[in-house]
Length: 67
Image (cartoon, rainbow, N blue to C red; front, side, top):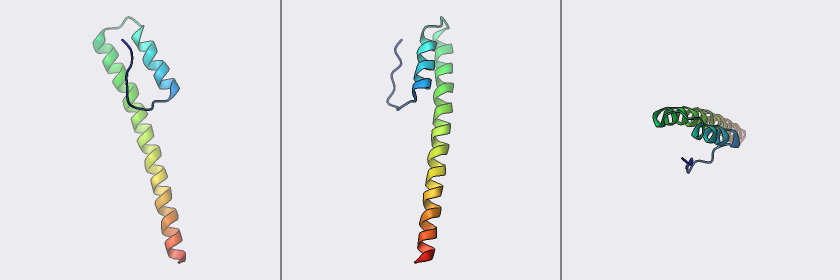
């Protein structure tokens, strides 16, 4: 079963998802494992975005204090 997603997943996650397709596990196991991989990626991605946003906000606040 091909992996279809509208997410821009990193290559390592894409490869791990492809490996799952050929491992002989049940469909339910595939879905559970794919869900874990995508959730982990989303957690890390959301954390990175929040950290970046916090930095931007700090820089903006520092700039406002200077004016």
